[in-house]
Image 1 (cartoon, rainbow, N blue to C red):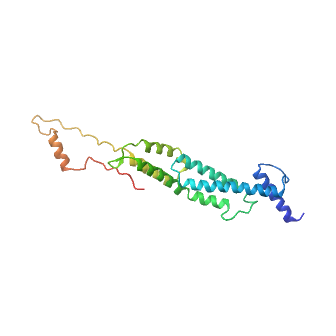
Image 2 (cartoon, one colour; image 1 turned 90 degrees about the vertical axis):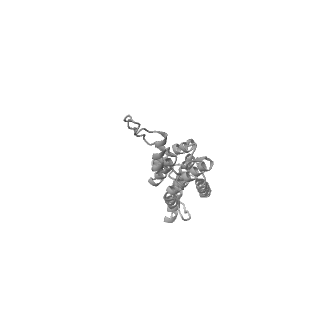
Image 3 (tube, rainbow, N blue to C red; image 1 turned 180 degrees about the vertical axis):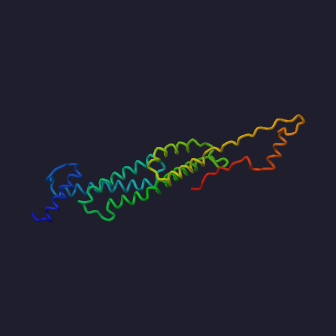
Length: 212
């Protein structure tokens, strides 16, 4: 058998074993059947990858987002396995996966931004923060499940979201000095108003939602 044909046959056997999950030493199907099966195998996974790419740029759910990420990565890994035996167009699966992973940080930040803005659009904002923070807390709890899969940039954004809804801490009250008997130093409504007028804003903290 010519060397070129032997190499082609060996590739087909490896291709067959990969897509059918076999461990055969010879070709168990016809070349025509194998060709159709490989095209179907590749087409199905490429369609799934393209669908998930579109969904990744639209979903507002961290759970759904990372489910799509896992499914897409799995499809790419399956295509990478047959890369040595099948001629892909550029970029080949291994190159495309590197590209996808290089953009994952930005993609993750975009998903969180969409989810946060969606909640803000439905929220009642009072004094720069949502009146009801429970939906925001639920979202942050859901995001925290995937913190091990996020970069430091993503985690910094999560901290910003958290700080934007955190209730301002109440200033500690200073103990009033006991009056010396003649009424001097006694804290009254009048003296308190005078103090606040002298130092406006001293006891207030500004908490504003960040702009994303």
